[in-house]
Image (cartoon, rainbow, N blue to C red; front, side, top):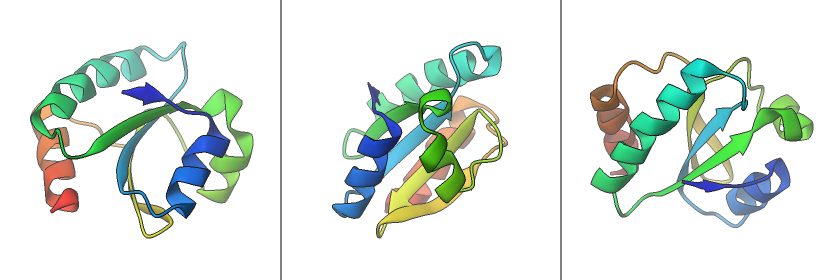
Length: 103
């Protein structure tokens, strides 16, 4: 997963990229666990770009995309977030979540 700034996430969305994005903070234990699960999911879905973004460094993006809490798993298409998921579940749920949205 490549770490992007909030500005870079917004720029990728505006360019029309389709990607998974993981919003986190560095001190969140659940975020660290989710990041490890997403690394596994990323290997299973090689056609989908996976990015991460530290919300502490992206206040404008947090406001404009209305990110309410972390961890937050999102899917971006058509210039903005298609869906934001706050209930993470397990790696299998994340895999099926992104597979369904990416098809």
